[in-house]
Image (cartoon, rainbow, N blue to C red; front, side):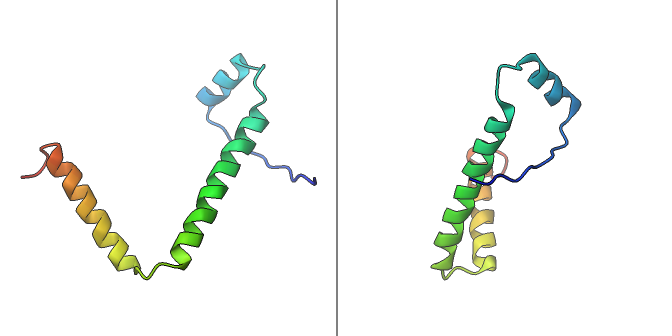
Length: 77
């Protein structure tokens, strides 16, 4: 399998943690995380391809969900 290299900029505090754990194959951790995100994006694209919801519909649903959560936590009445 051909591989493409990728360079990442990391915050110093994250780099310090990684340096303490050199036994971890960090490139493999990153590769797995990227695959997981890519699979979720592929699934989302498949689901949305069949959806009749508009972007406005999705925003309205999102606002209703946020309001319900805020109400449950007593942030709104």
